[in-house]
Image 1 (spheres, rainbow over the protein chains, first blue to last red):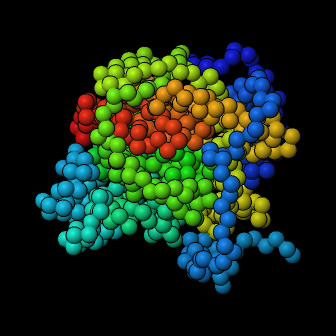
Image 2 (tube, rainbow over the protein chains, first blue to last red; image 1 turned 30 degrees about the vertical axis):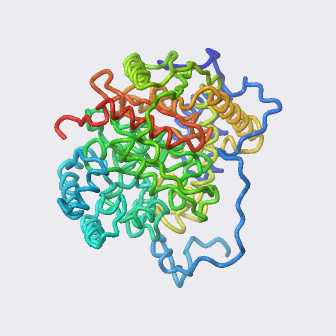
Length: 108
Length: 484
């Protein structure tokens, strides 16, 4: 029961199923158990009901707004500005060896 | 001393009636006593803070102090600070000691301010109650059974409880203004692009903006003077003439036109909040302002639009946390993909994962136009509503949040209800406008109510003027919670 709902009273039927959620979790690189998938599906359905409010708005001829200020990207000279701080930056890494980040073997 | 303004503290430091070391120690003692209850700070390093205070004292003695030299300021844990643990409220960064300073941190260091510690926050700034922090929720100092708001809840709590002179926050959908309202303090989100985002851990890059939080509008102006300014390391930092945000504080309010959006005073607004906000508007009339009715017809769409755009940007930004270069790595895994998936599943909390999932979905093949592009189009309609409104008024006022602070756990099971607590603040971020919240009374259960002031682009000095004049005529901003 939602105590305050400022939108239309339409009942939204969400087509999101567990297979969709599993696919999204895979794309997002998030390990999820079957129980977590089920919880996520039910919560995401509620959120998508909220988001569905947008669909009724007529936006023909409206330019998408990607940024708060409509300014173009600033360019800079192609010169080196940073000094080498490899040891400092690697000091916070989970696993390094000889200046390299270690991950499980990918190529046999 | 703990109730003094930055200006008064500055004067006391200059007159040598107190040293920065004494002032810093005073706050550190209060933190040691009160933080176990309030959980406002995640990290304090007394020796580091006191060393900064000693340097500030030397600078004060040498006579080359600035407005913030020697002032103890708390930093939201979203700002990377060199040699400080910087967790962003997440298990993902539980062991991340930053190797560099964010622009904002560097500006405060250059000004000679003392970093008093890192404040608790919702995980990766995703939340409106501070309950998503991996390190436990912050308590509202006015009633410890209630939330302080979020995501800058630790900073808001620390200011209200007199655990610092001022603090920083960040605001993506209301994360400075809503906790400021719920804790009875003042907070300002500047125009997008005014404060550099360099070294501020990214949530939704087209919306994120850092700003000051403090006990008064006058304090905010001094803090913003230090925080604002061009930085070439942030591609959205704006190149503008340097401004003195305190320049208009003393101006009378005669002729100020206040716009009241009818949508902000409709169903959904708590009666106690409405009453306090209306009383504040009446006070503004007494101060010489005139009131004009305006409409922001698309503003109610700001919540759905935000919950497409912010998660979409977050899902991209948070893809950097992969257990390779920094942060949490799962203890056991079979191969590289398994390492990514387990590290992220174990390192992120439920709300962060939820938003990554939403963002990944709306950006995925077949849904991009229906969700992401449609949201960006409505974002423009929302921004255009404000442009039209500002043809008739100088500032817009209304409630910051629909209710006063709610109880811990009250909205825990329902993400949508939590999202609706930012219904009056989100539109401001989508448009990129400056917005602030100042205390304007008390509602049900004697909890603070915030008045939101929205300005036109780069209208910060005008908003601070309006807020300061109100604070000269009222004393809501100087009230302190009992037993603190």
